[in-house]
Amino acid sequence: MSANPEVIVIGSGIGGLCCAGLLARYGYDVLVLESHAIAGGAAHSFTRQGYHFDSGPSLYSGLSYSPSPNPLRQVLDLLEEDCQWLTYDAWGVHLPEGYFRAAVGADGFCEMLTQLGKAEAITQWRQLQETMRPLGEAATKLPLAAFRNDLGVVRTVGKYAKTLLPYLPYTPQLNAPFSWVMDRVITDPFIRNWLDLLCFMLSGLPANGTICAEMAFMFADWYRPEVILDYPQGGSGAIVAALVRGLEKFGGKLRLNSHVEKILTENGKATGVQLRNGEIIQARRAVVSNASVWDTLKLIEPQNIPQKLQKRADKMQPCRSFMHLHLGIDSSNLPEDVECHYLIVDDWEKGVDAAQNVVAVSIPSLLDPSLAPPEKHSIHVYLPATEDYAPWANLDRRSPEYAAFKEERSQVLWQALEKVIPDIRQRTELTLVGTPLTHSRFLRRDRGTYGPELKAGKEQFPGCITPIAQLFCCGDSTFPGIGIPAVAGSGMIAANTLSPLGQHLQILQMIAD
Image (cartoon, rainbow, N blue to C red):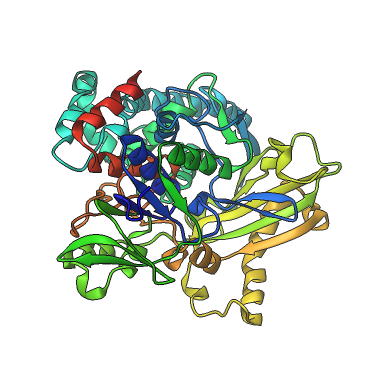
């Protein structure tokens, strides 16, 4: 690699690594610059006292088989890399109605309805499955890999025209909020609440804000016969490591502890970056920011920010932040029926997006014992994007007030986990509490957010091209949005846009094969 690469990618989140890896696959000279000492962004893993923890997502699907419609799986295939996948078929849910083991697959939810005494509601669920079937087929027939943000998209998407023709009548539904479909089929309150919960966990918004295409993809993947869920052996960091291996295999490079202080521009064009230590690296072809839209703007001199780009950022409302508990516990004499994942809902009436109402629990060492010392478990408990940043904004992380507020705001996480492991406080040997300030500090996330809150049918995620020439974006502030499959897709789209049309068509043929 030369001292001044063709493309600089700022940030090694999943979107940035997918973009950089695919650019390297296309033959570009690529350098990824990561501020943190660990690659992966919000998906990175870390270790404390022999316990391995995921900092973010741990619920994966569509990754243990190929070909798969999951964009991350497609990138791994193109980079000729993979993880060892551990699989399971159910997760636990503590709901106001009681506890249920929620199995994936065509009949799993019907079993829950039967347990609830709602056998009559099964008809509505089956009707929804039937309604979603062609939408799911349509959502998976056109891969995100086909998209690019230039006129070449006519050729790349047009490649699928014959396949997509029968699904054209479903296009308006796919672009509408999922509630548009749900309201026409589902009247049962429990099913409606359940669908709101699934939407919220996928997009950070309930059904009236989640695009139907995202739920169609999920229905096609989760509610089909013999489906399984996936978890990477070694934790989420194993996915990151696979992407880094692929990047480096094709000649790309990753630099850790390389904090980008400034995106350099000249005559309205991005020309490179300046690091915190003063080092200047020029980009011969482009700069791609995997940071959020707000964090990207912080890297550009105010006088060089186009009004259009500033307005884009100002219009976007950020999702709220997270609270985390990372625990190392004594696993002796735990019940044998403990699941590796749980969702706990306090009160449907509050709404799934209400503060401290939904808690997610992950115990990945049940699947992969190497993630914890012998006879121990590593546990991650978190509030998924319901913690406001404002009360934390002016707190000093070293102050007693901050410590007390952490203790207060984390109690709901302990209480939710006690529904799974009643004596959890007595078992715990290591406790790490993460707050919105933790998100902001370690993940370099503006206000601790994990992306924009854009409501389907009202707002759209922008593409990868910015008003600054040679500056591109990928990640959760760009189309198709938030979530692992989406940000992987955004990285593919940015890489495709930078690459010649002929090479893009060749890549699509590889995915098809």
